[in-house]
Length: 80
Image 1 (cartoon, one colour):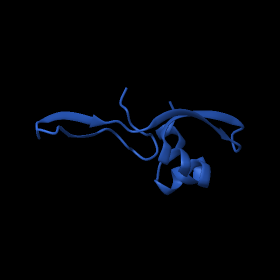
Image 2: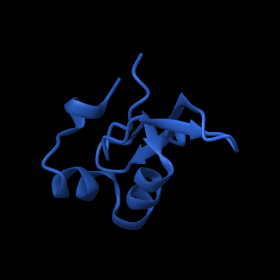
Image 3: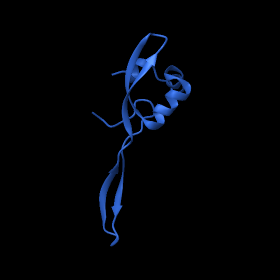
């Protein structure tokens, strides 16, 4: 399964770890993802989503359906 936020689309970033001697080795920055159950009062049920912390903050601020509408997504696009 891809490490990707279903709302914001955040995914791993790639780059180099640079040591003191300036030797470069590959590394990857993982997004801060969490599985979270979000209550949908319109449908009287929980939805389990894999969200980054930025996505989780957006859902808490706007609500799930409003956050999806702002990004032109539907519930079927993000539901597992």
